[in-house]
Image 1 (cartoon, one colour):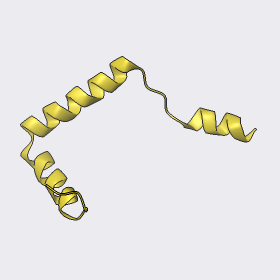
Image 2 (spheres, one colour):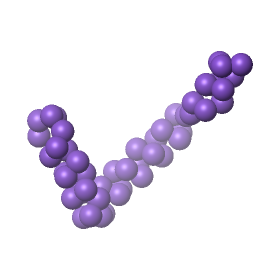
Image 3 (tube, helix red, strand yellow):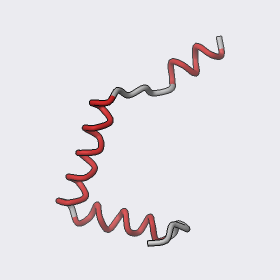
Image 4 (tube, rainbow, N blue to C red):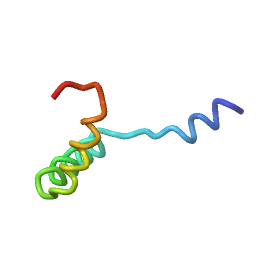
Length: 50
């Protein structure tokens, strides 16, 4: 029963869905200044070097 619940709740994506999500992210980043500012603010508090 536990495995069925986990399988039902975990997402699965095919190649086309992943590609479209990546394109949507890139287009959002290129066209929306608020999106870029929000992303920069998020990275500012992380330990990822820029």
